[in-house]
Image (cartoon, rainbow, N blue to C red; front, side, top):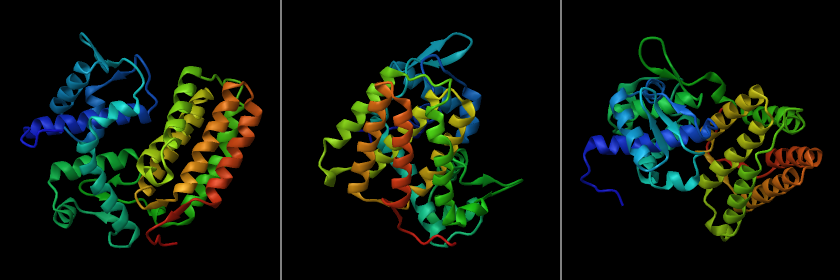
Length: 303
């Protein structure tokens, strides 16, 4: 358990270390991927010094390798267990994002956002708020305004956006499995299959919605990455980032999470067995089922 008396700099490094790992996984970084101090500092809205410290922490854990005069490279793909160490430090940011999402969809936050107003409303330090808003900007759900402040894109006010998102996925994801450049990473596919089976081994009452959301995003990003088409992969990354924001106000039914995981396993089984055409059929059916059934919105989204 983290030391409550840990210096503020160490707490910031721990938060950044967790965010760097999550960022690397969301971007699909594999062994040998270079992590730029400048790029990470800009993404997270901090200086290079705490980023450098966070990278050093991850290097000591054996997740990164320091290369003289170049920086750090990733030793392997990021796994769920790598993120567990930072779950407590990440929860503070998650709680703020959850409150921002709920208040936005309840109509309590307007399109334009002032940092001073948000700091008073949520009683948070500017450094925390900037870090969270910078992460939301990465996810495409807020934008930095010219000069000062932030804004929500107007499209976030539309309930129809969710349906359009899934219909867009229906158009491109199954097709990705049939691309001539498709190459299955069998080791990763087996690992992902085992992760789904481990999740299903728990009682439905113990299903963790946040863990399911991460697993779901990882599955869809993986199969799109295997397509070998960078434009398909980037499109799904963008969709997953958008839906991650919505997930803070979604209510997942345990039965729906279980069905979805079973459908993922069936698709992976087909891919591992070399039957891409049937996998594409199952993927389309999976997206249609998900669109129709298991996700409901707990906050009112203005149409």
